[in-house]
Amino acid sequence: MLIESNKITSHNDELFKAHKNKLVFTASEIGETENIIQKLIDFQIAIPSWALGTGGTRFGRFPGGGEPRSLEEKIEDVGLLHALNNASGAISLHIPWDIPTDYQAIKVLAAQHNLKFDAVNSNTFQNQVNQTHSYKFGSLQNVNKAVRKQAIEHNIEVIQQGIALGSESLTVWLADGSCFPGQLNFRKAYQNTLESLEEIYAALPSNWKMFLEYKCAEPNFYSTTVADWGQSYSYVKKLGNKAFTLVDLGHHLPNANIEQIVALLLMEGKLGGFHFNDSKYGDDDLTAGALKPYQLFLIFNELVEGMDAKGMNHATDLGWMIDASHNVKDPMEDLLQSVEAIMIAYTQALLVDRKALEIAQNENDVVRAQEILQNAFRTDVRALVAEARLRSGAALNPVGLYRDLAIRKGLITERGLKTVATGL
Ligand code: LRH
Ligand code: MN
Ligand code: MN
Picture 1: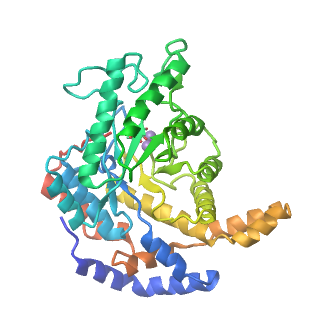
Picture 2 (picture 1 turned 90 degrees about the vertical axis):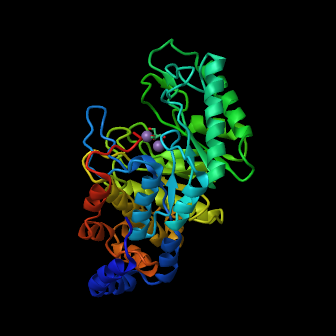
Picture 3 (picture 1 turned 60 degrees about the vertical axis):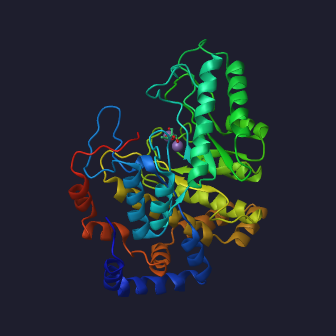
């Protein structure tokens, strides 16, 4: 299924007048907008291949129909999102949930949809068919060397697959840990994990990055071997300059100050990228910005400040990815909403008056500092985000057009009602 460009044009024509009015008003409020719009046009957020179907929960799954049945169909779905918003120009694969058969054909298909391959994700948290050893007691940390070797080899295979596709980074997330006190020797688990990671790291091409994602708990509920940013940092620092920490917003203990974590990792040159989502309780994997839009803004506020201080390119120097799961929404609509929320938070962070904030900080003017941040956060920047889409040939209202074109209905007709995407 493809969206014809005249459908986007007529949708935009219809909304143009109202949009222009909003844009003029926004510009009158904030002044210079061209720089911001260009940054938004450049900013791309990778879509996880595993979020295109309804993941459900461990209690039930309620597929909505028309889910992608293959890697090809997942690429087509991300292509649809990218046509609608021109901000989802990459797909992040999870192996072996996605196994390319014909690499060349997959690359051609992705290129037809203007998509790149973002980080490839390995999976040693589930046993795969025909696998010799079980990951029941961990993978890279396992007390049994043969299990560790199997997990290392899987990661190296994922790197090879990523190379064949043109990806340039590997994300490692480990479910490794323990469920009960006494189950594990923490130091030995750490050492085994480090040694295993070193072997994987040695297989990275020179232009690649390795992201080590941390998570406080789940599926292990007593200890996790890469549980927080400090633990991830201690591994990546030892591994070398191609290794970085990946921050998944849902992987922290309640009330963690994620923006401070981000600021410090960035300062240390060890922030690699993000898995965006939102949560109220744990790893809820809800739509980015659905619950805590101010936190998302504060994270971007640190990113913009820290990246600018280091002369980093906002669009390319970190890995921007979504990690979401769906239970009650159409995954495609949800992903469009996530991208929009991320774009809005980024734009608001670009509005922060940095000089004034620095003065307020130096004068310990707490009230003024808060005013500056909240002024930016409370500015309605949606017209700027929409204008970036308009200029790059995408839709002024992606979710609106998705519905008007009855895309889900079309996908159900094409693929059937009872389809199950591989993944979570
Ligand atoms: C673990 C995680 C990790 C996995 C994905 C499916 O909770 O966030 O990124 O690869 O979910
Ligand atoms: Mn994640
Ligand atoms: Mn997660």
